[in-house]
Amino acid sequence: MKQFKYTINGNIYNVTVNKVEDTIAEVEVNGTPFKVLMDKPAKKEVITVKRPVQALTTTGVTSAPVVVRPINVSTGGAVTSPLPGVIIGVICKVGDTIKKGQTLLVLEAMKMENTIPSDRDGVVSEIKVNLGDSVLEGADLVIIK
Image 1 (cartoon, rainbow, N blue to C red):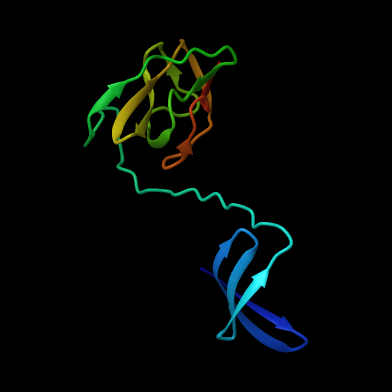
Image 2 (cartoon, rainbow, N blue to C red; image 1 turned 90 degrees about the vertical axis):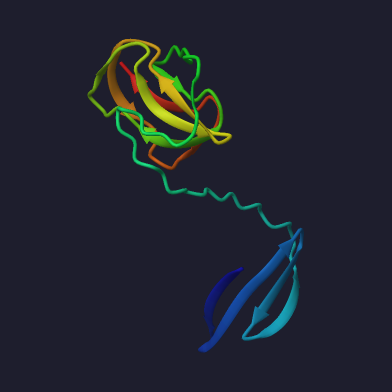
């Protein structure tokens, strides 16, 4: 349910959008219900949900089973996500010198914590995700030079 306040020709209108299906919107204007026919179907809204995350340290404080995923090898210096999930731990920071196999991030997927290791030795030049971000499979997570 979305609420809006419009002023038209000096008159104030409180509009509540209760439901939108295809080309019909059910709205209330100053408490009076209306069904509105739209020219085009409403766009689907993509909602990203940020969940509270548990702070992690390099000791790996966890509350769920931990799975170590195979290293995703990339050619552009990016370590990518092996599966869709939510970032619940960022272990590295920009400028860190890292070794192949060192844990960079922790990704929660299907109620499992997955450590995301480095696929090469190098220096972290960019971290493309933050705690609580939802990522898709194949998304760039960390850039290593």
